[in-house]
Length: 491
Image (tube, rainbow, N blue to C red; front, top):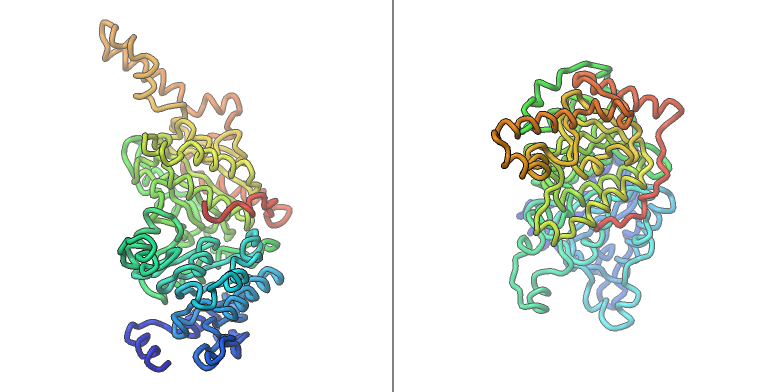
């Protein structure tokens, strides 16, 4: 055991108990199952706690449950007692409505414990893990190589952070090579690059273990302890400050800008925390506080693909809407999109069904939703960003915003292309139709028919959001019907 501990020190890796101490409020850890060990004869001394350290902690002053795999014990693999302990921690967290923190590093099911029909029959997924229904937050850190069980924990969690240089996959490189002949490193198989770009299984990338564990605490500050509670309110004293966001947003619709700067301006100062920043980059999702209250944000990002959502952005939006609705967090939608990113590749990746999944999540969500069109919102994406008829409490637009079925250049070419080509002066004829198209795209027409509820000046956007959020909470904290709580965690 000492040799393994020395190896961990050389790699600057923390032990399972050190990880728990970093996460927990000082002196709050109460360990359960310290006397447990493998039931295999002769393995009692080699398997302290059977490789899983867990129990009760407090995080940010709130009671919680923690479990941390001990990689010093048979590489953190899961034996019979290890799994029994883990099921207890899940069940207790669910029964007593406590958040659960998973600190993961382990090689999956232990052999030979899981061998044979009897070995595998009592080591499948515990019912409490599969039927969790977002009743309490589950937050997971991938702190080393994780295969099998730790991976199942991660992909069924509300939030996952992974440390650079680690790997997370269904099975490890050795088993992969034996099964398929593929030779891959842990990083190539399931490193942060794989999950950031391709799977979306993780929500944050950490540089170090300490960074990952601190991010668990940070994310937890935006969540309630359970589905019967609401997120903690932390007043900042920002009030109804009026700021000209047009200093950030260019009037030229073709010029990009970073929508994060708009978010930082509209919400309480230094409260924005981005969610899954590296995946589906044309859509920004995250939490911030508005008058101290936790608020979800879904915003098009003109810096990436002009803010046009593709398949990844659709999945990201659905996951985030489900998270917010399950934990009673209102959502603000900030539109600036030329429409969905359509292509043959997107169609092969089920773009149509992903768009409708997003719409379905909106339709089922019951938290307050506020929708503001900043510069433009075009085509079906106008609906997916919670446009009229999609369940928003209120939809507003800036006076110069553009709203239409398609953008002016494309629309004029499709509808009037032949006529323009046959005109005596095609350039003048095109300009005439573009002017008409721009007039039709003005939000004033929709506002005139009360299809959108308000036209607001850009500098009044924060005041607008504050007023409606305060009206939603006037009779008490916001509570959703949690119709999305059973939506699959991993699509």
